[in-house]
Figure 1 (cartoon, rainbow, N blue to C red):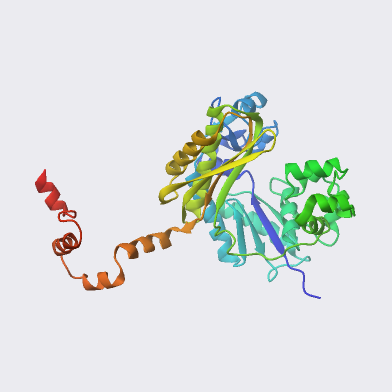
Figure 2 (cartoon, helix red, strand yellow; figure 1 turned 30 degrees about the vertical axis):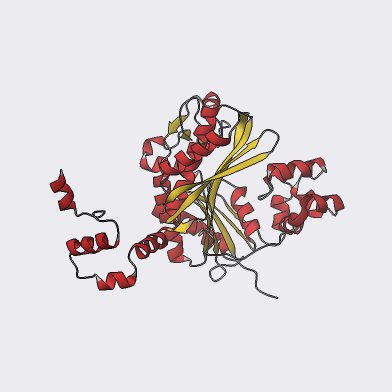
Length: 395
C-alpha cells in the first residue's frame, strides 16, 4: 500500500483587505471594503470586521454601507496585490519546491517529505506564525491526504484557522455541512441536488440514486469520491501557467443598469490584468460573458491588435464587446476572460526574430544606423526609413 501524501492548502485571509491594512495601519481592526464608494460601486472583498455585519464580495457598495454605516472603502490596488502575492509564493517556493498556485491568494503544497499526521499540527502552526512574522500576512491552513479535503479544511475555520483532516475526520467536519458548502459544487448544481433531497454532504456521500448519477453526469464519480474522502493528491507546480485567465462574479441582485454592469466589468478587467502581470503573460483575445436571470449564458470575444496585459486596453475592449451585444436584459453574472495567453518574453523574442532574423543580425552587426537605413530603403519604398537626425532637419 502506497504512503498517503501530506497535502496542505494555504489561503490568505481577506487578501486584498490585508494588503490595504498593511500599507495603511490606521485601518487595522476596522471594517474595510475594497471597491468603489459610490452608487455603482461593487465590493471586491472586505475585512472580517466588515463581514460580521453581513458585507460580502460582489455586493453593491450602497447595500454594504447600509449594513455597516462605518464601513471604510479603499481603492483597488491590483498591482500591489500582485506584488504581495508574488512575494508570498516565492517565500514558500524557497522552502517547498512542490507548490501549486491556484489563484492570487491560495496554493497547495506537497509536504510528504516534511510532515505526517503525527507532527503536522505543530509544524503547520509554526509555518503559519512564520508567514505572519515575515510577510505580515494572515492565512488559514488545511491539511489532509487529498487536495479536495485540504481545500475544505482551510475553509473550515477562518481567519487564522488550522484544520487537520486525518482518518475519518472528514465525516465529522464536512458531512454535516449544507451541500452549498462543498467546494466545486456551484449554485445550479446545489439547487438540483436540493430538489432531489440531497441537502448535506453526507447525503451526497451515501446516496446510491440513479437519478443522482444522471444529474451529475461525468462529475458523478468525482463528487462521490470527494465526499467520501478520496480524490486527487497530485500537486502540479506548472498549473498556474494557464492558457486562459478568467474572473466572474454573481451579482447581489439581477440588474439591467448599464453603469452598474460596466463597473463590474471594470473590476473584473483589473483582476485579470493583475493575474496576467503576475504570471508575466499577455493575451490579445478578450472574452465577455453575461448570464441572464433565466440562466441563459452569452459570450462574445474580440481580438486586440497585439498581445497585452495592460488594464486599460483590456477594459476598453471588454466595453466595446458589451456595447455591441448587450441588449438590455437582466444580468445575474458577469465574466471577463483572456484566451490563448502567452509568455511575455516569448512574445518579445518572437517579434524581434521576425523583424531581424539571425542572419540579418550577424551580417549587419557592425554597420552604422545610416548604412542600415539606406539598405532598408533600397529594399522597400524609397524614403520610408529615416534617422532621428533626418526628421529633426526636416522640421
